[in-house]
Length: 296
Ligand SMILES: [Zn+2]
Image (cartoon, rainbow, N blue to C red):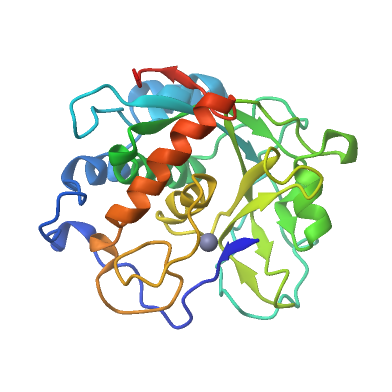
């Protein structure tokens, strides 16, 4: 099992624009993804969200899929996002604080839909998702893939708080009330609170999770809404076969550290090589498919 524990006592992320990226051929220009992450919703997306038409906003949330470093079109991999109802007010996320207060009573979930139906998308969730997707698009360019949101599907309020292994597993098992996974795409579950199953009482920001019944084939990502923008890319790194790392520059390194700044972190050349091999393997096996692009 792999997980991302929060850096304890970590300072807030530095302002990305203020930090020039160091020279390095696998560190990509930051200006475009930053603009995407911070851009207001397009009129089209705003209209769609205002009308509750989450599906119409999918394309607006997915960042542009540019070319790979070698100029080839990047393959678009589908990402299906399963949204638990967003809490109002949202959690303030004192990570690693005791989970003493249950989420239920004082908090309401104003945006909800029947499980499996298109999920309504709050503007806060849209901005958060767009930032996660922009970082994943930026960091996976050297792999030759990018990620396209193909569905926003509702989960019940009970799936907004996932504290146990059994609950993590149940998310991906329809017979236990979970979602049917999409073969060839990546399923991502968004929750309000994700418990650390190894350290009772603490919480984490994201996890790449495997169904023990078929750990190679049945796996998914769980993200907490408190996750900062690099967490989706970290979990997708696991999805593309990466273990945790000790390299200071790698986002697969969970050790809290001041340097390099967040804006200069990414994947190492070795990690990219490993992810490219994993992409080829997953594509051959049909575990992932290219919606478009990615000519061999
Ligand atoms: Zn991890």
